[in-house]
Each structure stands twice: as C-alpha cells, then as structure tokens.
Amino acid sequence: MLMKNVNLEEKLNRLKNKSLKEEDILNAIRDVLKEDNKKDDTILETLSSPNTTSYNNFDFDLLESDKIYHIDQIKKICVTYRLRFLDSRFFKGKLPYEAISKIKQLEKNHNITLSGFKIMAPSKLFKLENYDDPLLFAPIGNGYYYLIHKWGNDLSPYRKILMWPFKNFENFVFCVFILSMFLTGLIPDGTFHGEKTAEHAGVIFLFMFKCMVAITLYYGYLSGKNFSSAIWDSKYYNN
Image (cartoon, rainbow, N blue to C red; front, side, top):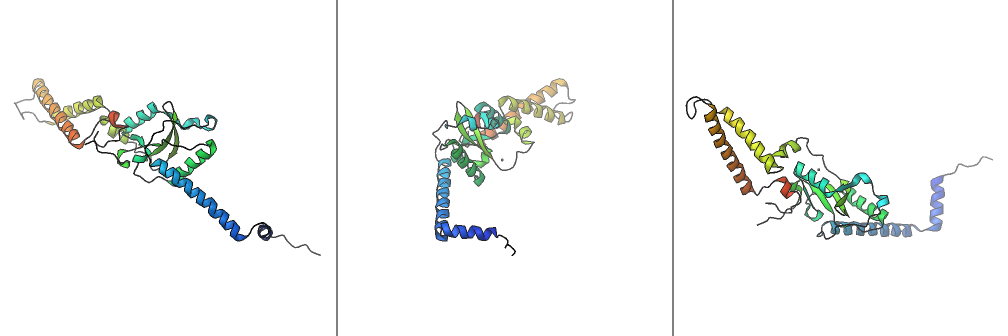
C-alpha cells in the first residue's frame, strides 16, 4: 500500500484550526497592528515637539561606533556645505517610514524612549522662524550625537565650492578681492585716463573692490543672509 504524500499547508491549517479560531487570529493581528500604529504616532509626536532633551540613556555596548559624531564634526560639515542642524520639529520635509522603523528598533534594543531628535539638512527643508539630502540624529550626551537614519539624495559635489565664499567673512573678502581683480583686468585701456598704468589700475581696483563689497553686503542685508559659521544651528530665517 502506497503512502500518501504529506501536504504541509494542510497540516498547518489543521493544527491552526485546533488551537485558534480564525476570528481570534485576526483579532490578535489587529491588536498588534494597533499597538504598532500607536507607537508610530508617539514617535511622530516626539519628532514634532519642542526639544528639551540633551541626552538619551543608550546602551553603549549596542551602539555602532561609526554612527557616533561630536558636535564639532557636525558643525564643520554644516559650515562647509551651508547646512542647518536643528530640532526635528522644524523639518518640513517628509520623514521616511524607514526612519520611524529605525527609531522603534533602537528603542526596543536599548529599552528606552528616544527624544531630542535633530536633523542636518539644507535651510530650504526647514520651517525657519523669521527673526523680525537629511540626517536624523539623537543626542547621546556630552556633545555627541548618534546617527539614526540618512535619506534623500547626496549633496552635489559642487556645493562645497559654491558655498565656500559664504563660509565665513574671510572667505567672502578673498572672493570679492579676486573678483575685483578680474573685473579690473577687463576694463580696456583709456577708459578713464589715457593709457592704463599701474597707478591707474590700482585706483580702478580699489574703486571696483569697494563697489563689489558694498553691493554684496547690501544684497546680503536685504535678503537677511549671513555666513555659514553663524547660521548652522540658527532657527531663524534672516539670521
């Protein structure tokens, strides 16, 4: 007599029917999903609330060392690429669900409730207050932050070069100086006083330099712009 092949799905269904009714299984799943959604809502509420926490009680044995950064390192990157490092409540972009999942997993692994979230991103991604490609961090303490999630596109390799003049006042003056020299060289001979001599060129350069400084500073004042070293952690638009 030949033995009949075993249908594993059929065996599983029989065992399931013996132990649990289908309605009980669905109710259990609903409870799990409901609890999970409640956790998501709690995290989103924390992300959008004012930040009053400067540290979280992480289990250091579970932290990945390559994701720990000091505030000085964060500041340097922000100043170099003209980014902001602000509380997550100012972030106006869409937070990916993967970030929420990583927060939940961290909370589960470390048996804590995370808070004090900060995000590094360009100014346009924040809801900045008027004075008149993002990274999500959580504070560890003593000026250290733990990188939870990175999303979006990488920054353009040209951003560092384009933002270099706005890094600080010294860079700005140097760029205006070079630009003034270039514009002085474009002025043809005899435009102001006969043949262009070294003395005349120096006068023209000083005139050009003062004009460029005045124009750029006036534009910066009107548009509320400031140097990257001053705004990297400012929540104000015109600061």
